[in-house]
Image (cartoon, rainbow, N blue to C red; front, side, top):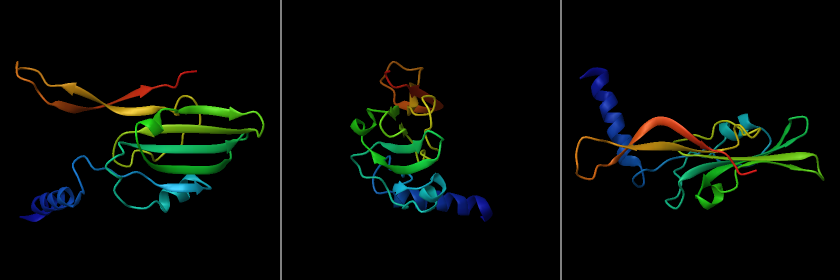
Length: 147
């Protein structure tokens, strides 16, 4: 019995408690002043079925000080405009990123290297002529914004 049995019980309980297949959670906050408080006070709730990704929008000054952070569950269309955009009028920058996976939006996008649309890469299994399911691979594919 011991630890193995209790771990299996916990995994079964977690799977049974998800609201629908492929459910996930994102860190969520609106207009937080910093990333620590956004993540610390994020609501612990499942994302709606019409969403597939976690979105982060980060506004900061030319000196790198965060002024506003919003994180939420998002649809594919909301993740269309990732990247960083500098506002000439206000000396502020907005960086947007999207990711796929359970609470994947921990960090903040701060430049064109990390303000991306990151999705998990899927790969077909081989060995049979019959249609085979896609299996997740532990790799990330980064799609950089068009400049």
